Each structure stands twice: as structure tokens, then as C-alpha cells.
Image 1 (spheres, rainbow, N blue to C red):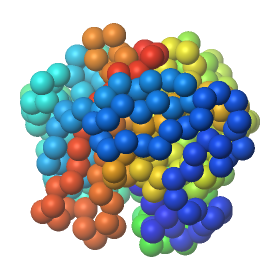
Image 2: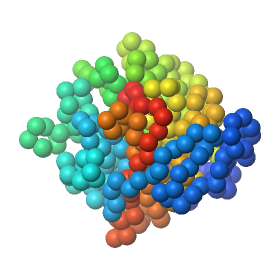
Image 3: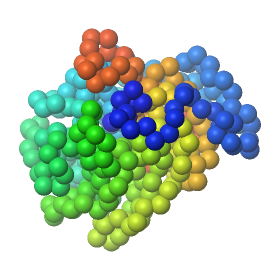
Image 4: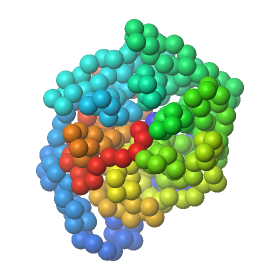
Length: 333
């Protein structure tokens, strides 16, 4: 979910625009080059990110990128659709919903059935083989009414983690959010709280660590996962300076890519906050995923953000962009 500065009711740090590694006090490595126009090559801190390509245009408001069954999946909140996109950029609508789809995020059960978060209804939906959507879990007892659910990630053991904003968003008074655990037997309970606008989540391949983007906190926060799915006390995985993380994904070298709406970029960082690579875009980046044949294609969901009241307008500025990157995707989702 976007947390663009134009929507914040609380501003923990002053935001002034895109920030280079030098301005953030990082002096090692090659200088950060100025971004070239979309489609040009970008050399960031000595690493080359291949030319950015358009895979799909004309989306209303895309989010929740996932690589699944050899296709890229996404939720178009404005169109109230879940779609899958093949390597040639051909989309197929996989599900349509009739509820307010801001936000609406997706993942899958270990048996391959699609899960859709009906955020404002307080329900987690499951798609059956005939395409119908049924209630998989009722989340209403875990959060206050009017506080929307946001992201979901299912780990390798079938545990589903969902985060809740903790306040009426957008427009409500800010309050920290939380993470809830839904186990395969259907039980659900809160497992973490005090999170400043919880957003994208990722889990390491060994199911040992969960990392969540704190958009208002401008950091990535990690938890150790216990055998029963409970989360430990949090620690700061990376302070992002002026970065504002939205969706995230993990790679095989242990680094994380995060989408950044107000800075219009997708950034790769290692634990501790060192910036490894940055892809500059011409509009806000809401979500990212690693996929493709060897999972070394970075998919980025970019949209011109003009506010929640214009999410479904006819301009349809949403784009799925791709770039080749050095490390393959890993973990969950």
C-alpha cells in the first residue's frame, strides 16, 4: 500500500526528494550516476542494472507483484482484478472482486490456491478450483473496525502473516499497526505490534526470519520466527534514511529490494542499510518482485500517484517494468 508523503498524517522525517548514496553519508564504492531517461542504462555504485523494459502498460493501480507458476501476478486495485502476465506481457484476469480493493494483496496456500486479502471487510478469501471466492479466515476479531488489512506472505510451512494498518487509512489519525499469524489449522492471533505503517513483507528461505517494511518509520524491521510461528522482539534490519519502503522482495545474496513511491525508485540494500543498487523511474514504485527463468528479472510496478480519490481515473498510468539484476530471488513470497 502506498504511503506517499502527500497522504501522511504524521511525518517522522522531513522528505525532500530522491536521495543519492552520497547524501546519505555512504562514501564507499563508485559514485552514483544521475539517472538516464527510462530505457537507458544505469550504473549505480559500480553495478550495472540492465536496460529497463516495459512489460505491460495501461494498469489502473497495480500492486502486490508476485512470481508464481512461471508468470507475474498482480492486483489491480483500481480495476478490482487479480491478473497474471506472461513473459510476452499478455495479461489474463484470474479473479474479479466486488469489494473496495484499496488495498488488495495476494499470495498462495501450499496447495496452490490463491488467497486475496479483502482488506476493509476484514476477511481473507480463498479461490476455489471453480474460480469462486470463499472466506478462508475471518480477521475482524484481530483489529479494530475500520482499520484495513494490507500485505500478506505465506511461508514454506503454510503459515500466513498479514499486517494491519492500525488506523483508518487514509485520512485517520495515525496509530502503529500490527502483524497477525494465521496457521494452517485456521487459528489466528497477533504476533507483533508497534509497526509504523506496516507494508511489504518477506520471509527467508529457511523460514527463520520475517522482514517488514515500515513505511512511516523509513526502515526495514526483522523478526525471528519461532517453531510455532510466533515472532521475536524486532530489530532494525536496515535504516533507509529518506527511503520510504513499500513492497519488498528478497534475493539469494540476502539483500532486499524495496519499492519507493515518493522517491520514484527501486532500491537494493543489504542488512545494515548499505545501498547496493538503485533503479530510478519516472513515477512512483509501489511493488517489486524477482522472477523469470532464473529469477534474476526484477519486476517493478510503477504508477503516477495522484491520491486515493483518483485511483480509478481513466489515465491508467500503471506500468510493469523489468530489469536484469545480479542475484536471483529467494524466500517468500
